[in-house]
Image 1 (cartoon, helix red, strand yellow):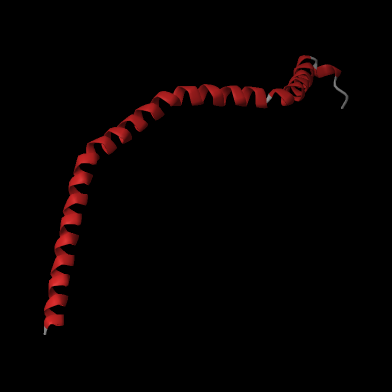
Image 2 (cartoon, rainbow, N blue to C red):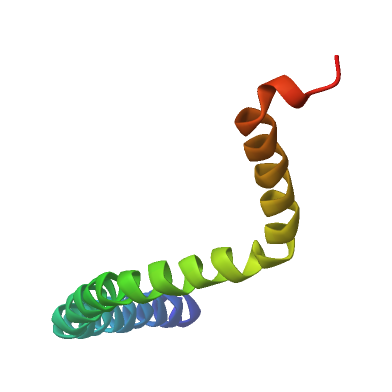
Length: 92
C-alpha cells in the first residue's frame, strides 16, 4: 500500500512540476513575443530598403552580362540598316 501511495504522490508531483514548467514556458513566450514581432518588422523593412539596391545590381549584371553579345547585335543591326537603306542594290 505504501508503494501505491508513493507512486500516486510521485505522479502528482510530476504533474505539478510539469504544469509549473508549462506555465513558465508560456510566460517567457509572452515576454519574448514583442521582440519577435519587432524582429519580423525590422526584417521586412530592411528587405524593402534593400530592394532598390538589388534592382540596381540586377540591372548592372544584366547590362554587363549582355556585353559579349553586343558586337553580334550591332552587326545584325548594321546589316539590316544597310539593306533597308539601299533596297535596289540587293541581289535577287
